[in-house]
Length: 200
Image 1: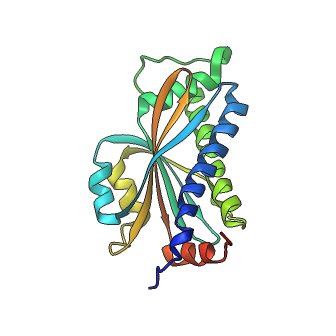
Image 2: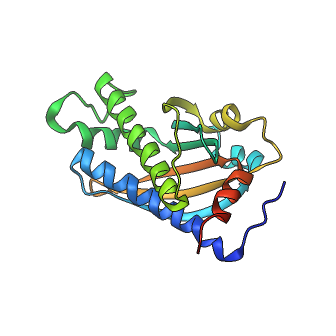
């Protein structure tokens, strides 16, 4: 497997992160009416087995999609239940029932979180596609509430010898910071191929 890449193209990872984050923020702002920023604070390459440890067993909300075109693979957004409730409340506003202190989610909150998940995943991939000068079709987002490590296992448990790209990010909305972790599991060879075609 050749992952050699022209060193001048390493900046594309930053561009993909920035463009993905900006697209998500723009879409969320339009959808919720809230001024929203998504700041990518760190990018790491990390071995897949280590990600399971990094993610831990704490129950979180996970939104995953599959890229059905190059660079193929999966993307997983993880955030905690309190953050999800904050976002849902902002989106629903005065329209429906939300209870910030209740355990679990109302139907309306659940559907708002699902919609936010759609916006985040499609926005992030649109940003990638812009930088890579291509189109990337994705599957319908899949929603899970459970231990993060289990979700990683389910998506890429069979790719033990591979690495993934991890973006630490903060979504700033509603005067509060909502931490969202973005784990991307592209087929790295395909991603490198796409990057090699880009003029820098």
